[in-house]
Structures are given as structure tokens and as C-alpha cells.
Length: 134
Image (cartoon, rainbow, N blue to C red):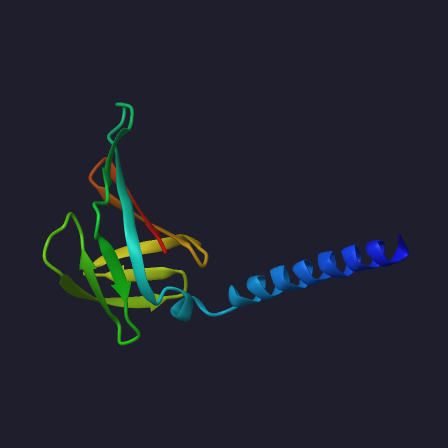
């Protein structure tokens, strides 16, 4: 019985340590964590024009849509099954400038990447949230 409890304890300890190693990967800088090909899941745009309630339009990604962040500061992307395109991007802390638009990184894990842009035009506020997955 003691041997079974000991083996169970060792097994639990092993899985706990493996979980810690996975957490250490997130210690990489943002500039490394964003690299690679991300599946484009959706783009939600909220338009707020007071005193009207906000309007939200969500455009889901299609099969094959992606954004690929490269180390050389260029992204390659396919959105809405269009031809592959490219743009420059520049990372500044938790902000990414892509083709004149600035996005704040809201979430960045090994499998989830959410960024948001807020633009003001007169009294209208446009909030665009892009969701990507690996």
C-alpha cells in the first residue's frame, strides 16, 4: 500500500513539474511569442456613436485564413480566402503597428492571440478586435 501511495505521489509530482515547464515558455518576449502562422478566427468591429447603442459586426474567418508574423517585420496573410498579401509590422511593447493601424495585444498565449484597435473619428469610436489561434 505504501508503495502504491509513493508511486502515485511521484506521478503527481512529475505532471506538476511538466506543467511548470510549459508556463516557462510564456516568459519569452512578445517579439518571439507572436512569430509564426496564426489561424484567423474572427474580426469583431464595434461602432459607438452616442447616444445610440453600440453596433457590433463580427466577421468569422474562413477555412485557410491566417496571419503569419515573420521575424523580418513582415506579415503574410490571407483573409476571406483572398490571395496572400503582405504588410510591414512593428512591435512596440504590447502594441503592434500594422499598415498604419495600431493594435494593443489583449491576450497572447501559446495558442491564443487577441489584439484590439480603437480609433476615434469625430464622435464615433471604432473598436476592432482580431482573434487568432494556433
